[in-house]
Length: 423
Image (tube, one colour):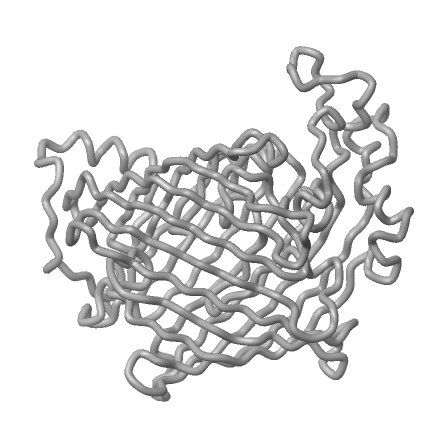
């Protein structure tokens, strides 16, 4: 077995890449990698919704004999993270595009997440007004209003979540595949324990206010168990899995939650996502687009599941925040039915072989928008920004995004450091 162990520090890689005298951009698509590659990254970053983040991520890629490169035969990711805003995550993810000899693709995820200050801005987007003065406690801030101020933790609640998912995909015709899966979500929600952060803060939040007037049903307010089966279809013609430059990746499936599996409620969610990659300048400039719809088609999604976005690869949360509408507050857009559009340009301005690494830098510009479709009170929420990505061996991607919302009702903006492209 060809085993290559690489401990990758993003900061050191950046310095080394620019220190080497080389052309600004020199594409080489013939180079391949085989065997196992391990990338271990101690992480230190910042997310405007979560504060300073620190932890570690380890990626394990098996490229086999190299014939599939840049696609891999196996991928495993282990990660741990903690933030200064009292959140912690421990996750493990695997993706096996060639599972055994069956020709199936298996993806699996297990994760534990706890967030004592989970952002919560109500339901139905603009149907739940955001008033900055309610949470601004600093008189120097121009948004400060002593008469309106309630608590700097007003737009939060305390949440703990376990997630376990497993999905199988199998070939149909051409680039079409079927997908089926099973998932378990255990979610516990509590009133923010404000006294643990500041003894002078009132024990009051938007969550408690909505619960007191029954806008959050009492039987859903503390969370619950969600168990589901998933089924549908995937079309995938991308030229690469992690950093595609051309092709289409689309999916349509339903996720059915049922009491017989242990779910608290019975309901069905439909998810449709279309992603397309346009090579404007081959091997250098790509325009990437994503259009997503998620909506309830049977029953009613309980309050504690509303922020969850389902896909054929990994579950995300939103809309709003680093993975959906950058620049808009995390989970600002929550409702029974959602729509999302992302448009991003990715320009490779620097490529270099350094030791046994392929290192590529890209400049990214993006526009994100979305809204709650099931509420007439909501409207489009917009975010714009730019980013820098470092791609190592065409798979290991670290991205810095700086974004701004286009309306003060969605916050001022955000700075995000995350692994991978959004789509």
